[in-house]
Structure formats: structure tokens, C-alpha cells
Figure: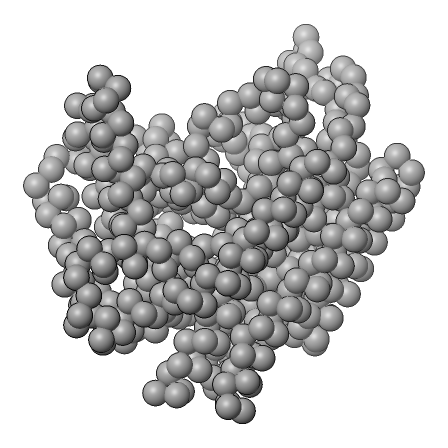
Length: 510
């Protein structure tokens, strides 16, 4: 009984700490927008306050482990200054990702020993994204020629070296220190300086000139809606997820007695029940930024304010996805954009494979992450081949299109669930137990699809948006105005902590 109570405490403690600190950040965001609005105080004060509050939250949550945030950011800034704009993006990338990996290895395999330890590597995942993306943006803006850049790179390019205060504020501000969402440096500086509501238009000389300032919309409605989603997601997670554990998919009795339809249905439902913890964490982080006045994207065609500049997911599109691409385009959006901008667009060979490898390394050192992303490569290529070869036969009539959508929805949800089971189970043995119980059927099917179906050759840059975890769906980006490109976000480790502890406790009991 004592052991069970200790395990329960260990499972709930990181969630309680996270929620308490994020609620404090929400209140601080409201205060920040009300009393330190850009119209009332200087950018310097806003930078200082945002940074100090962020470091306070980091110290409260992680103690002296939070020094890693300053060390990683500080050394990266020194690299930027010393190395120069030509190669600093490569050096910053290697250092930031290497430092993150070392911290993940020491936390999981050296200092943890199956007991709960503060997951300080979670915020470091976000800081790593910010360091590497900003280094690339400075390289694009201060070294490369405009004609060498894509339109996205040109929009995000940074034309001057940030000051140390601006750099620390961007990396460690209280709005995103715990769970993101990630954002572009230009979007963040625009918010701090109060230029988020300026309308710009190309003038006769070809340069952008400010024409007028729009009325600042209130984020209250958007914040309330997102907090409601957070509440429902947390309630669903606490009540349903514990009764439908993913681990039951590898239970020996279940494997021996359950029929195939039962296995498929339980696989889908158990992974469906595991998603609300991510919905909760990412939506709450988005609401905090909105409460501070950050995240305004413009107005839609009906004149309603859009507060989704740094949103990290679209729940309805995720749950109704009819393709692997559609699911991943709407899941962990900002990390997908980061992978696209720092890896996929800058590699000279095998960009898809390299991007998946980077994603696995960034997520952590658990073997289950690598199994998931390697399986994801296969599933992505197979799904793309199937779509290119068959979809055009089912466009008309509408009844046939509906039938196609239903079938592809079922296949997509099963394929996604099958792919991400190791991501939840974390370890090699239970992951292979699961795939063995399914006879590696989707792996085999994916290989057969790639061997038997012709693969359509595409130009990488022209079709960037068609690759897994690489960009947002185009139809949701229509109407994007001059306020800036979407930025990026996420940290899975805060959400994964409960699952890690439960998994380790289960293995200890066995």
C-alpha cells in the first residue's frame, strides 16, 4: 500500500507543479498586459520583467537545475558573437542539441534510477528550438542574399544581432519557459515593442511602410475558450486515461483472448485517451501567451480576431484526420515548423529521413521515441504513395468521396495509433512485444506498398508542405496578413512525465 501511495504521489506531483506554475503564469500574463502594456512602459522594462518572471518559475519548478537554461543560452549567445554569422547556425545547432542530449541522458540513465526527478530537460527542448531557429534566422538575414531565401525564410530573417537582454527574454520569458509555445524571434520582438497591431503595406519604393495602427482586440474571449478546452481535457485525462492504459495492449491475457476487432478498437481508444494531456498542456500555454497579448494573427474574413499565431494544435482536425499528413499537419504544429526550417529546408540529401532522426534526438533518449519515428518514416512514405496512386479515383461522385473519407479515417487512426505506441511505452521490450502481437503487419504492409506502387517524384521545395511534421495545412493559412508568419512550439516531456513514472513503477513491480 505504501509503495502504491508513493507511486501515485510521484505520478501526480509533476502534473500539480506544472498546473500551479502555469496558473501563476496566467495571472502574471494578465497583469503584464494590464500594467506593463507597451503603451505604458518601455520595451526594456517589458524584457526585464518577462525574463525575471520566467527564471523565477524555472527556479520554483526545477530548483538549481534551472541553471542549465542560462548555461545553454549563454554559451550559445557567445558562439553567435564569436563565430560570426557565416557558420554560427551550424555551431549553435551542434552545441544546443548536444547539450540537450547530455542533459537527457544524465537525467534518465544516471540520476534517475527509476525514481521521479525534475524533468528540467522539458523546457530545454523549447530553448533548443529557439536557439537553433534564431541562429538560422540571423544567418539568413545577415549573411545570405535575399534571392537565395524562400519566402518564409525572408519573412523570418533577422537583420541585426539581438542584445543579450533580448536574447534571454526570448529564450526564458515567463509565458513560454515551461511549455512553449515556440515563436519566431521577430514575432516575439514585435509583441514586446507593441507593433503587433500595425498594418504595413508595400510602398512605392518597394519597402514596407506603416500605414496605420489597428484597434487592439481583446484576447479575453479566446483565453476563456482555451481555458474551457483545458478544463475538459484535464478532466478527461484524469478520469478516462487511467482506466484505459496503453500498456494493456501488451497484457498477455488480453493478447491471448481478445479478437482482432477488439484489439484494433482498444488500440484506438487507448491512444485517443492519451491525447488530452497534450491538448491540456499546449492549449494552456497558448492561453497564457494570449492573456499577455501575444498570439494575435489578424482578422478572418468575417472580421473576427484570430489568436492562433502560435497555436500548437487543432483538435477537430486531429480527430477527424483522413490522412497521415493531415494528422501531423495539425499536431505539434510549431515543432513541425521548426523541423522544416532548421533541417528539411537546409539538407542536401534524404531530407525526410534526416528530419525524422532530428525529431527523435530532440524528443529524448528513450528507445521508444526512435522506434516511433523510424516507423513514422515508413508510414509517411507508404501513405504518400497510396494517396498519389488512388485518391484521384475517389473524388467524384460525392457518395464515393464520402466512402473514401470514412475508410481513410479508419486507416489513418489505426496507423497513427500503431506508430506511436512505442512513444508511450518508452522501452524496447514492451514496444517489440506490442509489434510482435500485431505480427508487424503495418510495417510489412508499408514495405509492400513502397515496393509495388510507383512513387511519384516531387521537387523538395515545391512540395515541402506534403511531408510529415513539416508544415501547417495550407487552407488554414489563407488570409494570413502582414503580422508575421506562424511560429512554433511544444514540449512533450512535461506531459510524458506521468507516463514515464508509471512505466518505471510497473517495471519495478514486475
